[in-house]
Picture 1 (cartoon, chains in turn red, blue, cyan, green):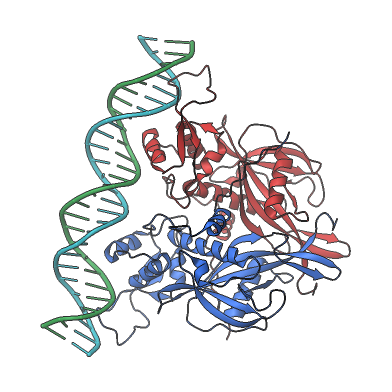
Picture 2: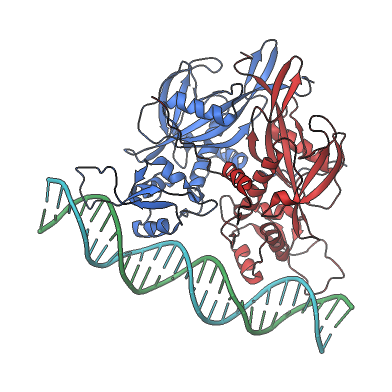
Length: 272
Length: 272
DNA sequence: TCAAAAGTGTTATAGGTACACCCATGC
DNA sequence: GCATGGGTGTACCTATAACACTTTTGA
């Protein structure tokens, strides 16, 4: 049985996103591997799934281990199972590592905690186009995983309450707009944006007594909002370009996109 | 090591959808298990992932084994890894079964092929609401998997070329409309539907010499179309209700929806 | 008083909805 | 002819985009 249906090791990888407000850029946490295999290569944080853990549990644990704080958002993306992607020896057997990837969102600018598995970490900019120009080559198939997750984040902004997950509990309309503008790399009209936001039924709610206000800032003090309820399956803010990725960079990028697509199509003639 | 990072068995489950044109209903293929565990329970088709297969390969193989034809669409949904969902004995060890679910679309009305694992099969109606009223209780966590996949299908109709996957190579505009109306359980205005469809850039293209035409039908002969190119990340047809699931049935259903959501939110206080 | 940030109002246009009407075929 | 299914045209209305304008604060 072990021959036909091989055992495998289940792992998770967490693609930790945050917004760098100084640079106005979406960034992702990468760590330099301090252990074999692929030692000294940059990679996504991740690890094996423990006994009695689900992959969700493991992703949460890993996120906390790496960053020191709880994620404000954690969501499964997809499972990568190529038998050549990562093979380990367990006892006498060689088993493959199957990994499930997660999007994690990291709100505050606290520094991540280094674990024994990593010798270094860095937040890398993830532009909408030409990701591989700003990120080093990654271990295993992590380039693919990163691209898939990045596309998913940009897409989920449109139809889920993901945007507020990049913000603290209390925020202003301008800050939500900043999230959209930063991640989509677009400029939005403030007037129209406010109209749309306040038309999304029940998503955010005005806070009468904001617990804190920033001092020493110029301009009219903003109204503070708090997330109230996240509407399901409703369009929040439409992407003005209609497309998440405006342009393909290369054949390599194109192929990745094909594989990444939400509509992988298999149409194979079967001999009868 | 095996203690901390346990080995597991990787499986796939394929949620095979088709449209029953007589009943105008979305249907899913379930099989009655002929093997332990959970013998005689209805379940989703599935099986273990072989050596050198990816989960995608295994899902394709299973689909062909069960239905006898190639799917016109096959797409990963998510991975279920609860350590209590299914435990098998391999040698002296107990290992859990981790399964990755797939949406498969089945175009033609050919009968599925029975395998040795199943004693019976049946196509069950999947209404937009109250799924569990038309489907028997399923083995393992297959109720959950089925619900997740059904929601995904209804959602993907809106933003992907999934609709044509339920149709033969050559089809009419009325047939695409039937796909949307059947799966969403709505009525759409033919005039406006045509406008929208032909405005989706490059999706479908008119066929000058339709290879076949149905004889013995009344009315004006239709124009035949063929899929040309599937635009990525573009809205095809907007769901007129704005929501995939109009109503929650019960607390049970509500909880499933929560877990199913595309935005599972984890917000846990961590002791520092 | 001016710059900066928040917030409002006004108009033009694109897109969606509703519905009346025309076309080609089988019987 | 007339029922049937395919297909077109148009008027109405709402959502969006563009942009001018007002409000409230700090320096």
